[in-house]
Image (cartoon, rainbow, N blue to C red; front, side, top):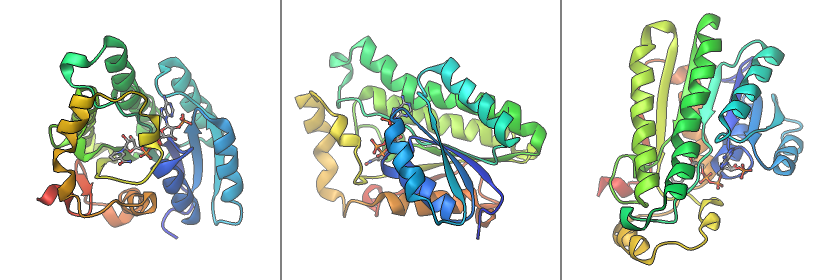
Length: 252
Ligand code: NAP
């Protein structure tokens, strides 16, 4: 088992990639603190993990409630003494809004969830885990964080931001036992598109210009496999990397 005796903290674990990452880590022996807003979905995940080598513990948390999510980390450090692996995976889409159509409210919601939340979580985590000898951060970015128009303006800015945050942490703390990497998924079948309520027609048309080049959609479990690699010692020399997992879409 690759994650025996490890404690992991995974945000956005109630569905999609976070759900798959939590299960994969628990199968490899980790105790996984699974965080999201929908507690009933997390409770179902805890039940799903019974019989695995590790276990899943559910904690309600909103990553855009900065004081609240800091308290969830405080409580987790108090309960477990350490958090070896932090996965900043929670994220929301942005209705494909280009700048001219993007409200302040939408911009703030997307940036708070996708970028400021991970920053606040990383800060609290580093201030607990540096004195424990280090650990691993995995941030879920997107190919929208390395290419300009796979989504609207706020999502794109948030994911470029998380790539920058990843590389900054990676270099700053490289000699302190910390590794920080990002995964940049392409199209993955999850609940994320369900959240689209009234997407911009213009933005959607522009953002889908390259859809014909996408070889296929991926599964959440395929992303969880990349997360396991980054969480384990198999990637001990990988730091500050953004690993694209998109079936070759962005290679075109
Ligand atoms: P998903 O199925 O919609 O899962 C998103 C998760 O984030 C849910 O568990 C949701 O839980 C959680 N979440 C959202 N806002 C939150 C908040 N304020 N506080 C706490 N948790 C919150 O989507 P997914 O595709 O797995 O997304 C996971 C990550 O992958 C995101 O960062 C997304 O940007 C990224 N990504 C997705 C794709 C794709 O094609 N699917 C491609 C590239 C990158 P609750 O609603 O219960 O809080």
